[in-house]
Amino acid sequence: MTRDAWWRDAVCYEIHPRSFADSDGDGVGDLAGARARLPHLRDLGVDALWLTPFCPSPLVDAGYDISDPTGVARDVGTVEDLDALTAEAHALGLRVLVDLVPNHTSSEHPWFRAALGAPAGDPARARYIFRAGRGPHGEEPPNDWCSAFGGPAWTRVPDGEWYLHLHAPEQPDLDWRNPEVPAEFERVMRWWLDHGVDGFRVDVAHALFKARGLPDAGPGQHQDPLRNHLMPYYDQEELHPLYRSWRALLAAHPEGPPGSAAAHDRLLVAEAAVFEPGRLARYVRPDEMQQSFNFAFLECDWDQAALHRVIEDSARAMESVGAPVTWVLSSHDSVRPVTRFGGGSTGMRRARAAALLMLALPGTAYVYQGEELGLPQAQLPDDRLRDPVWERSGHTERGRDGCRVPLPWSGTAPPYGFSTAAPSECWFPQPEDWGALTVRAQQDDPDSVLALYREALRIRREHPATGGGPLRLLSESGASHLAFDRGTGMRCMVNFGPGELLLPEDAKVLLASGPTSGGRLPADTAAWLSTAPARTGAAGESP
Ligand code: GLC
Ligand code: MG
Image (spheres, rainbow, N blue to C red):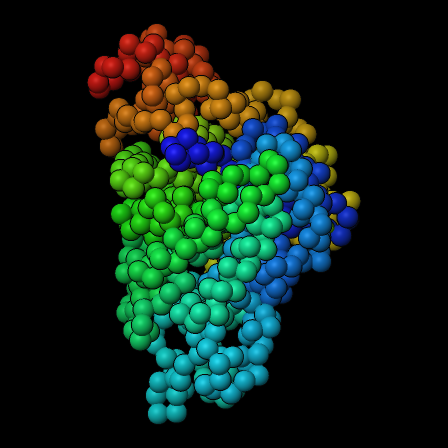
């Protein structure tokens, strides 16, 4: 039944609304701006879009600190704007996902205000995780847990109790064993489903339950992602019955308006920072969520052996539960690929090759706004940084703002068509040298990153071998290139260099991330080849 469901091979575009497009000239991107730019997504050729949080928020963590989970922040628009955006997206054949942030609320949420106004032991505190401290006067935090943003995960309130926050202190963690909490999130999901959304990206999906008794985590927290599933605040067993109940809720909720996903095909995608493939696969068992971001892929260096291993391991783990692998090269939380892979022309060549690698792999893929333009990480002045990581790391880590600057749409100087506001009024400043990176500058240039993404997505839609079909790795781990066949007749080859790679003689190049003259693939370049069906039967290929 779900073997050919839309989400199995969909490409989903992540929109960070405040940085996408501004319709009203206040320097902040908004839902109406996103709606006006939907033709960009249609021309790009994606299947869905995901909006990061747009609910009322004090914006301590870019909107992941929500004070009203069924509202729309004033600077971003209104519920009617969301309805209009959703309707128009559906009319263009695009599904719409919104973010669900169930691990924590903002400290400005009415529940947390009530908790602070109530005495220790009051039911108002029982929606969060308040505890007495350790030490003779309770002056030590209840345990050794650290915040993912640095520093302790506990903050003390004036009456002496401590509350837990795995992120910023302004993001108190909810107690998912309190029945009021799951009931509230069922209400929240139903609310957005009633507004026509096709599913949810579930924030910090691995963290909702904490081990009973809140045992110490020990040294080395947040240092080795492969150990994340062993932390007492992550990956608890109780998550799974909860996600089964959500999947059932989505499927049972009344059908949306025309153009929306069928109820049984509404999507849940887990943001689960669980790196052990077998543990990650548990989130996408047949009756749980359908997708979980493959962060191991996103975190890989430009390294054949590392990518080879992640591709093999994640394909195997997801196949064991019948789920698609969910590839992702960038997000609002990561350093832009061009920069991560070395910056400058090297970084650009590799980012282009990585795009072809990702989009050739079986399963689903997420593209973060600006990735299709090859934007590098922006360098922001200290006084414009907003990410709580900057303060909490004692100004040693600059945080994630450099991938969140507004998109350049047109023109040669900031704000590049993002807004009609003066550049100084914009939510983040944009670099002065992005004139060649705008959508307008790239759209008619066949060698642009935008053209590469568009063409890759077109072939992906049309070629019978792409999508959810099988993958056959042809290269050995540690070789200088990576090669795999998709179904019959399509091969992806990526050259990690330093030398050139000879392409198979009778192969026709469908698309390449760089020049392939003379049948040679330069270093840091990928190509999609059309191979005669007969050839794909031959094991072990040597170019
Ligand atoms: C997720 C979001 C990130 C946010 C964090 C806390 O990881 O992607 O942006 O800071 O959750 O909500
Ligand atoms: Mg605006």
